[in-house]
Amino acid sequence: MNEEQLVPLDALSGLDSAVVQAFLQLTPAVRNALIQGYSQRHGEAAATWLTRAAQLWPRQRLGVSRVTIARLFALLPEYMDQPGRLQLAESIWHVALAPSLATLRVPAGFRNHSILRRLVHEHFMAVLPSAVELPDALRTSTSWLSDPALQAQHQVLNLLLIAERDQLLALVDEQIEVLFARRLDGMEIRSQFSIAGHALLLRTDVNADSPRLERRTVERQPSGRGFNDGAPKVALLGAAIGGAIALLALLIMTG
Image 1 (spheres, one colour):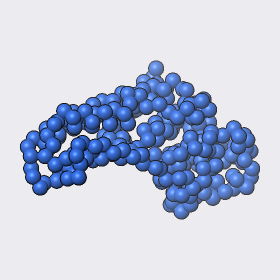
Image 2: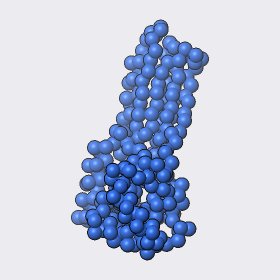
Image 3: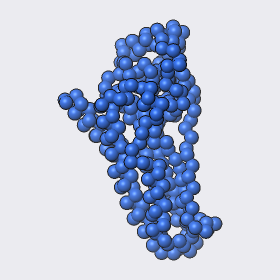
Image 4: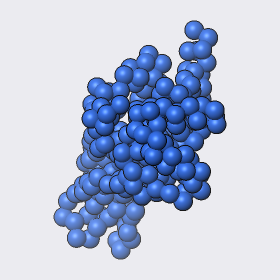
């Protein structure tokens, strides 16, 4: 495979950890077979380096370049079983969530709950849409992501995220009612809400004339440093996603 045929390097940003872990989780025999295929595509010297890296990566003593990540990403699906591909596809979905930080500054003594609720709802609806789509560069150049099982998993993840988002918004409504129920002069109010890598800090600010929402995107660590800089995790979805994916895998194997 020529380098020109690899997935665009930028499309794999944030997937260092997921790709390396998928490689390390292969059985020794399968990993050796992958390295042989790697040698045929990229040369013996590159395969020798990969063999050495496989010994150092578990102890996090060696970084990984974006070119190596792209090469492994292109080869891995051929050597992974279905559960492994599902796990890698889930990591891609997590990265597509594009984490962010936001602060909602509220004037001291402000008690218009409906405005605060609207601002928080609009923020989370914007950063967590009803359907998280995979990057176009991956969907159009990676055929294995079109597997029906992986698409079904994608739908399950989106449904769970919507449920958790709605649950969080209900909690936000309750918190606003409690926190801003009465005027407390001189007391700062701070409350943080987090889901799927998105954090919103709600706080009073004596310098604010009206509620003001400030957003910023979290920049991921560039590839080439520690491979454990990987994809963000959805804090509120862990157990639910695990159970759902296990059920999905069972249905696929028995269907």
